Image (tube, rainbow, N blue to C red; front, side, top):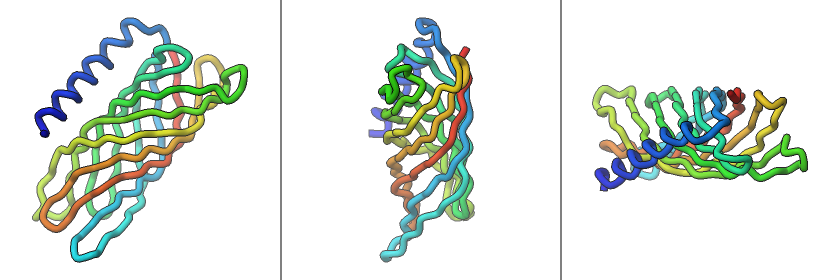
Length: 177
């Protein structure tokens, strides 16, 4: 199963890296927000942990209605550090006729490297997947900002600790070139 997930992820990344050669509107950006991790410690005890998330991303606008991008995300909470490499595809739906304000909705898949703070738990790479939605506002032709929400399903489980999902709320800024 993990081999299949790795193969699918590698195919998506290869496709993502080839698209900028065809597209004219590339972008780079950064985002800051909050990440909530839903931990389960067995015996009916669970805890939601909220801490900052930092993100860097780069991608391309395929056309006015779609974008494809890679995101590096970092989160450090009281139980573990997480570093994610994500591939995302969003549909852009105009809210205003001039397309300055767009609603976006899309899918995400990638890998998450979890490094637990407890020395008895090993670090692990896990497949994550989910989706995102939000609003994007074009300040000018080169600069845009967005507020977004991303849900990520996780499958981390070691000993008595498991991480079922992570949710991110973020504010981002992108520069087109």
